[in-house]
Image (cartoon, rainbow, N blue to C red; front, side, top):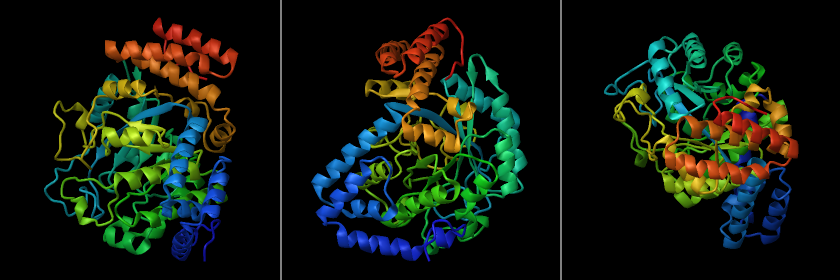
Length: 471
């Protein structure tokens, strides 16, 4: 039976409920009065449930879909403005004991070089990232209790936060590691992490067990219930995601929304972020082996529907996707992107992009300066802000500010101030010129006059060499 309040994976991600929702969607995909009713509900900015959203996903009526896309763009602006948060992944280790058939780090892959960063190598990678201008990292590691125990992860986090190089500092470390215990989540919380991110890969239990034939990740329930343990361990912000292309996308979409509904029902706060990865080519992995890959058009539709269904969530797209796809999705709800990513262990200190240890092929290979300039030319504000996490605006405190729109008085000035830091410390002359003009244009858009004045004063001080102002 389907129970959103249950702590059992097979009850809050109920297979029968997903199947029933998909059947309901098929029955009603041409039901214009119902589709209009669902759209009207979406316009209230309170979200949609998995069944309502599934009807819109099944719908192929062009007029309705154009309304969905326009609404997604407007909701993104309402909650997150024209800001796009920047981050980079940092791969610590590709040792892994799992047998995931879609990941090149799987245990049986004998021709990938295995590597684990020493603390000195972590330091070198972080300095390389700081020298680009990054302030926010997502650390990644394979699951290996011998090579990558929790103590190693905690030591790496400590090292990352300790490095102050020139004007550089990593101010927020998000963590993407395997499902673990409440006790270990407590340790991560104490280490000062931002968001704990864990992709489900697929919510279809039978497929999940086939795709994860060996290793601890084979345990569907333990993996699916990880976010509840993380929140029990005190982590306020968690990030969901499925790997589109492993299973049928409509199934994944409905189940993903059920997971978001479950977190809201049990913990009073839904996912801080939802990532949108698609399976990509990598060493030892051919995505054509998976017959559930999705087109760019369907991907865009999914993105727009996640945005209107979970309006408050941060939505993430990585360098898995090329510039053209990323540009399209930025309009439909994405609020965070990676830039200048290296998906290999030790990749940032290599002059030539290494490919033999990459977790996936990187489609967008531009520098961070190029990505920042591109965003500004498209009318977005690249933001390196980490203020909410450092000011304790996490979990339900962040969500209440976001849902009420009050967040604009924090996020807009913080975005402009952190962009000014980037322009002063790392940007090319061309990017500086475009960025300074953008800041001048955007300052008047800060809602509160007092905040606007203080932000203008801080921006002048940043130009004069001071750093790290925040609201």
